[in-house]
Length: 444
Image 1 (cartoon, helix red, strand yellow):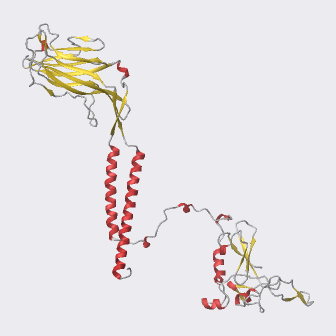
Image 2: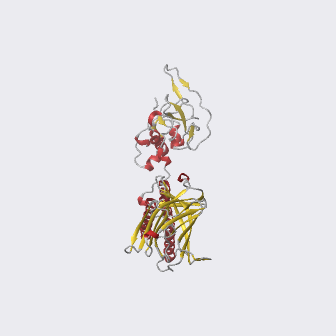
Image 3: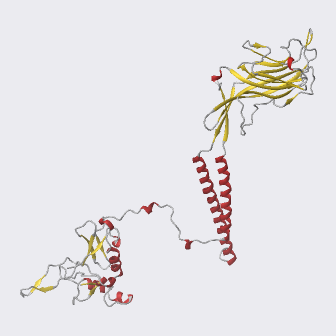
């Protein structure tokens, strides 16, 4: 009985399901034969077109004629063909070390593979070839002898085929001094950019925007004002605050939430007050109008320490005009002159990272100094603050760079730097190799 050589559907001599029969150059056919299990295929060596031979039946009745084989075209003689066709003698070794066995039609069938597919007694390759050994048969035997793991009819799925970053053996790479210098510079440049981006990612960014709206709708149409002013040459009993606006408000000698502090042994006065104004054009002024007796020559020289509207914002990243008149010094001005400060108030909103909003107001200022007269004579001087509101609102928002944007920037820095460095190194290496060839006379 012949022991078949097993083979899967993907390995043996390029054998696939679509090609059930393979023929060698000597005309030997390898046919597909199922083994009863779906996991393997059996390849058996057939030698068609063999000449008829005679055998003797068991009863001794004489020679019995075996069935005739189909006609065969002439093929060149050779040890492979002679062995495959069952030449007289029957003891000769078939190719690939297969010994003969009876085949239908008087041929011989392979009975086994010995010594790795090499004929017995063939110790050297040239002797094996001379004896009719076909190396393809040995390769087929080695490739087809292992069954498929799991008994399936197809090769197992290899997840590594999705690897697009195939590894190059280290022995196939060539280090250069130029490449080392470029690599060090590339790493230092990447480190510098990475630290810069990390600093920007950690630091809170303040973004501003402009829009037309009343941001503080819950204020009831009021704006809180904080005033701190010193008049070093005017007594406190003469100093007062007056408020008036276009809504008809006219208040003389406002004293709520205000405080007067004597200066220069009572010769001067420091006025501090908190009050509210309507969100309409108007003015408030420091004067002697509320005094019971008007002085003849009031001295209105002054220093403004603070004038602010709304909540007090102390944010380092915002440099706005929240106290534009802070530090204004008018001590050297004309003592009998009036001072006009024209203010343009701009609503401002500051929103921190937690979403909490604070409402404040910036303002621009212009001032003039003059001595006023009327038909009755000189008008009593005062310090006027005339204001108007801007319809434009400025909003400051604290923001931190999103994590995904930071990661994207870092990937762009690393990938771009390595790409440019690789192109630069490739150009330098190619130029250096070309220069070496020119020096050796191999390139013109």
